[in-house]
Length: 169
Image (cartoon, rainbow, N blue to C red):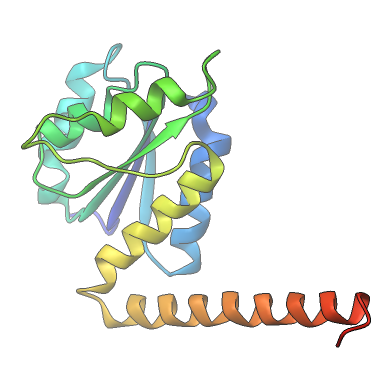
């Protein structure tokens, strides 16, 4: 059995600069993950095997990033009962809008959670995976609470700095 709780799959190794943002967030929350490249169009048997066997290996969430036609997340969701989070990659002349539309237009019965296009979306996918796992794992939930507290402290510090700069602090 794998120790990875999350699998990050991308349609191409060109997607790594975006998808590693999800990995950074999972690292921050102490969540074991694995990354792989598998294409819904070029390696459908590999995607099918990954999808059908992830649960048996102990995986609890799948994050799938793809650009252009972006069928990867939907293909995976069709073959697993695990939560699937889709990250649209801005790798086409349409700058990810095509991928976003492909991902959010899933038919009823085949849900795919879809986040923003690009690196911000991959970061949010990592956070969303942590939130899903935080329901079951209290240590992950505690790290999420600490992360949100850190963000609040950063905003307060930026507000204070702004007010000082404007002479109103």
